[in-house]
Image (cartoon, rainbow, N blue to C red; front, side, top):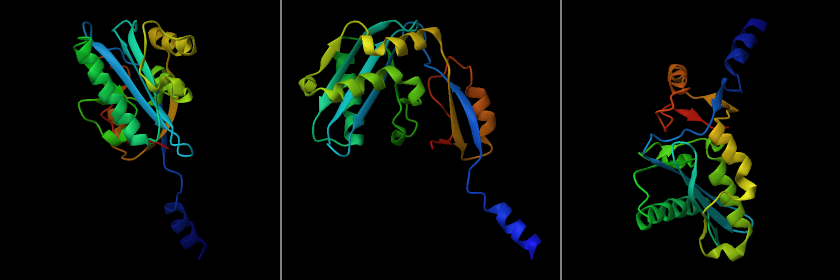
Length: 195
């Protein structure tokens, strides 16, 4: 009976296997701008914000924006950030661009997925925009704001941040290894589950 229990219990592992990734902002190719976008919505207040930043392959600040959104939900704020970024790209002739977001529900379209650790500047702009209702109009920033300086420099210097993730498919281990250190690729092609 003990052997049977051990056999059954061994298969009932409630914790998925994890792997640690070293993540950092990936610059675009020379001659291309990267647009990192983010949106947030707080369920209790339904207030949210969007924030995004355009940077070149050296990590230099080109332009950013942030805006407060009222009566919103998470998916709406993410799409608002994308729409606003595309509009600004056209209005200011900021092309070609590569777009990264940490919004995983988009899947992995031509707009690439980046983990939060790779999207910190846009995340900070988003949260600051959500704090201040006077930002109902889009605020454009020609230089990095003080609250985002550490994240901007971390990106420029290529600082890595560690994240533990659950492995959904054991075959993805080779894919994970191939995406590490590949600065030419802006998207993560590995099927992973956030926890």
